[in-house]
Length: 332
Ligand code: SAM
Ligand code: SF4
Picture (tube, helix red, strand yellow):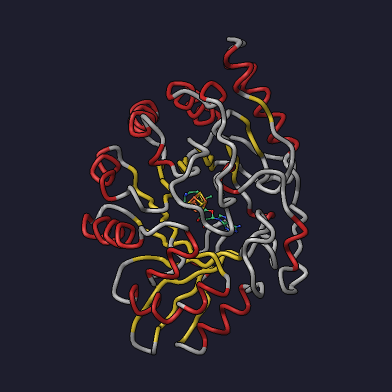
């Protein structure tokens, strides 16, 4: 097991398989995209598979593939199927913007991927285009419904909290009230200052808005390490699972069980930390798994107890806190 200095069991690995994305979400990516990594800097398929195997051997039990947009990665399904074949007991998940998801669902199901987190900030087409820079809402909504109709996925919808998404709150609740999804609202983090105008919306603001629309009851039984969950009766008639992920106003670092592997082979023990541990170079130098395990053990031992992302709570008050990498480069 990977137990850190604060007695947290780090059993969850998020693997970013690409830094490329087919959307340009205002809170995540600069309009022109980020400078893509050179081909050779990015891990090859077999390198991802091997490194995931090393983590699994050390006690990681859950792996989530993310990006950029993971479904853009050439050979992505080969990575998933080999990881599955070599680690049958791993719980596998994918976080996707949903644009290419429809065409990937059967293969994901065949490889035993159970958890799908789909990012969707609005169900209004013009607003979607404004937020993401692309006219892809229909494809995303269709993929969500296809995934639900297959019956084998647990689907969570991730919505970043900001003015545009809150203007669409009623429409979102109406759309999802009869669908078997978990809605999770995420406090916007300051990864790209200056591109997300408007007041910062907090978890508490969201709770207030939900309370105006139905009965909200805390449901700790479905909390995750990052999400504060509620049973929500929308309009007093429609039971829904709704949650909030509040990295700016609340710290959930004490429950953090995550490690992150970037697509260029760097291990990050904290999303908001600046420390990265190079696994690619020793792997490519053939230094052996013991050397990799030692680096992973160092990262685990040195994982900070908490991050220091505090929100000023003002208009764009968080913008001064930009971290060094874009969210799309780390994988959220
Ligand atoms: N492209 C995929 C997607 O959008 O689901 C996977 C990568 S994306 C970086 C992972 C998650 O990070 C998404 O749910 C996205 O909404 C979230 N995210 C990106 N930028 C964010 C920000 N500034 N604050 C909060 N969440 C953010
Ligand atoms: Fe791409 Fe996901 Fe970032 Fe949007 S949130 S730009 S879909 S990586």
